[in-house]
Amino acid sequence: MLTVKVNTKNFQRNVVDSMKSQVPFAISHAINKTMSAVRKDQIKMMDQVFEGGATRFTKGSARVQYSNKRNLTSYLFYPGGDRAYVQTLIKGGKVLPKKRKLVEPAFTGGKAAIRLNKFGNIPKGFVKKQQEEKSDKFFVGIPKGRPKSDQYYGLWRRYGKGGLDKRGRARGRIKLMVSMAKTERYQKPIFESSDYAYQEFMARIYRQIPASFRYARRTGRKATKNLRFR
Image (cartoon, rainbow, N blue to C red; front, top):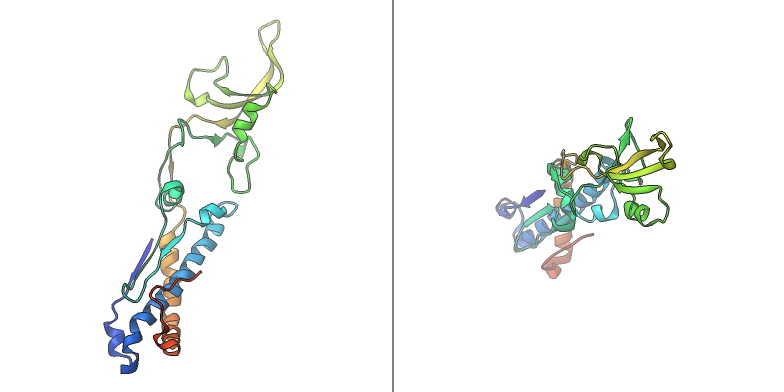
């Protein structure tokens, strides 16, 4: 998160009298134009940092509260609710399941047991789809013969014939495809939002202020109460 608050006293002392009344408008315009650029840069950085890029939903989590000439405060923030996971990617912390267990791809030799989407996630509805298919290739639970431990709980796939042969040996084999072992996991911070925002803001604001004063001089009293930019 980045918060910007400006005191206009220095600007008031350094402009001609005819422009003094336009100082709050000009500064608000400069802040808002810059913060709009900061938000766009956050979205660009998401695509660079997140594996496979960021989804449209994730990109929509970057928000800006814009300033106006009566309140020269603006801030970049990420809301909670169904986008709270973005805050965890920024700050780090516990990831909790929507239901009882976290649903995560199983890995063998560093390779996922199922084909993940371009974002590195399990395709939406994958587990439910396999459960609903009439085929007995997939099942959710702990396989027979394995310890009754959450470590083995998940979506398994059968290969070959099912059941046992005359000697009591399995006629096929099974493989864990999706793990449902964990009730929580720790997410380390991977998205340095505040650093990116500060760098982008400082790179732009000193060029934007003179441009905004020129804009204020051209528009005169046509300044709006609350300027927003997309």
